[in-house]
Image 1 (cartoon, rainbow, N blue to C red):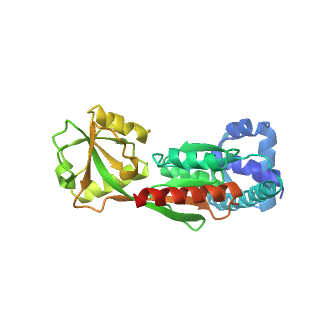
Image 2 (image 1 turned 135 degrees about the vertical axis):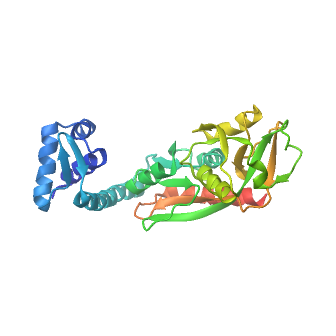
Length: 293
């Protein structure tokens, strides 16, 4: 079994299409097909169900993919470890987040401490984020809710109350707190389903006997305050995301334990570089300072 066979197999398995996989790998379709066939011959079993150029992983292929990805991850982490220990070159810290409201001050502090380290951040839904983490394509995830698994290191860094943001002109703006049941007839702005805080809020509201009515659903949590300020709707917003806007009032929830946990996630098999270790320390210190206020 050759390393090239594993690389080709993983790409085909993820895309389940020969033409797309060949284009991604910059090889001919015939060369790719022959390599996959040789791998199957080496293993003594087919890994795909074939329909024309479309491939679908069968049960054996699904099992082998997990092993192949793990093997390639270990090799890649070995390369990163050697590079980290022997090179003075700057490197990129790869991050995926489901919650971005706390990220700017964290990245600002990290850049002050390690100005030569670049970072690449992706705002993703929970499932997409976990996929990248398990593939070893990101160093850390900042996630709400926490994600736990045999291969995932999950560290809770903050317990963050969720409040209701209403415009200053709203009929509830004079209140400092409110029962969740009083919000059943209100219109909300929110991120789309798939984001941790949205899914959690929906679940808690259902347990209280109603489904929130959404007038706006988007992909940018940072935009919600502007929508509330424009009187489009009200919003459930994490306490750490509150801004100093005179035209918005924030109400505590009285009768429900409506809090989100923020977790820092890493892959247990991924090498943690010196820069990544420092980033973890910055994250922990930041949330300690926020919750101490």
